[in-house]
Length: 600
Ligand code: ATP
Ligand code: MG
Image (cartoon, rainbow, N blue to C red):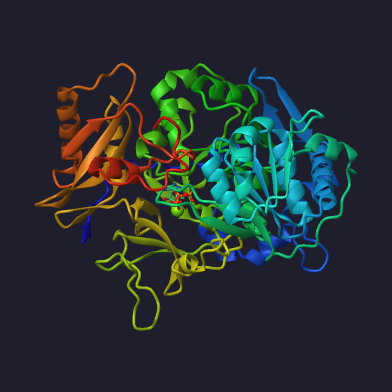
């Protein structure tokens, strides 16, 4: 089946002048850096433990707390009123040690699972690091989950300890506690001396605990983190990560986020998801920078104020947030002093070329897309500060990462050659995005789903489930998730392509495209469009948008049908749930909606 050429190639490349950048990037010569790179070498930049031991908490805080960075701000929390409170590396290390001692006192064994169900409060960060220091496994839950997703995830991971608040406990945990025999301890961060029945007062336990603790002698292959996927394509999977992941967090923080020692860095992702843990906690701390944590929810004005007032230099965010800022208008940004900002990156969903370019207007900097997933544990493909950006492209693989596009047969299965190796696509042809296994942050399994894990590998590659093409220069272009791709009259149409085109229309704030059955074409494209303020749904606007897309994409690819939506259904991690739009459109069961954002 022939894939259509994405219109994104119509956007001019954004050249980079290294001499004009305010800070010399960590990665200037891509090819040379790739040739010289080895994971062994990257590991040497870390401290390590005696023997061949490795522990994420040691790399992230303890070694800084024992050195010249001890009094540097590690985490700076921004409260609702804009005031801040900070934890230095020294203090964070002490808090983590206290938490590790609490786990020891409770008899928690290495490898056992400690969960959190918390907002972005200091206790959460101390719990993550203290758990890792103790050698137990940390699993963050998104704080807005209801009782059912909480139950599901605690059960799959046999959670032994849960750290949460009184309100969350009452609403979300107490009703399901009977179904969780493995859950021995529920620790309340706000018990205030009077814990609820069946819970313990964490503050009291911490107050009694020593602020030094031994670091568990974990090895690189010991399990460290359990992260559930976003549930965009179905039931969320629990991906297992090991302590060696920190090697990748370090290397990707260096190359893809360009972290330098004096950076003030802000990752807007919630630590309930893999991005918020890997890049909101571990990567910045390993680099010894100051990480901003916003205690509130997203709001355009607030975000611009944080960028300005906290003098953020490196900003890592997501397309859904950037599109929301776009909706609020670029002039909102220009009213703020964003002169400290030098690098903006995005992840989580395809980044429309429109948004990349809009960044230049709003921040004076283009947005740098990068790609990865829960399973990869770290950034795999990225746009770098010193490298030309091709808007709409995810960029090129990190040093140490080999990526390819594997050919698929009619059923969507990878084509395996006679030699047992997967057959790779020619340049610009669409296939499944694949990675050569062996990088340190690669998941080591789906908890309790061995068969599902095994099915991810074929012909020498890890298959990502995403469709992409690679151009002749090695830039990768996202086409769509395997499940979301639309097959119309012999063409493969990626929803991203259609959505990005609609986004170019001045009335459109956000768009989603799905395939709906058609007796002639097999499927035709249907688009759902959320309008910017000041635009109202009408038949005339519907026709205009369809005409607009047709002119740019051609009749074969443009949506045949178009509906207006007040809000598109999204996961709580901000991803458009196309499968849900499709199920609703076709009157089918909605499937697993445990991560669906409320009211969508
Ligand atoms: P599930 O696996 O449960 O269906 P999910 O795949 O959305 O959920 P995550 O691991 O959080 O869960 O998200 C990773 C996916 O997000 C990628 O496989 C890809 O589909 C999408 N994604 C992430 N970054 C990008 C990007 N820069 N461009 C396009 N897609 C992206
Ligand atoms: Mg996935």
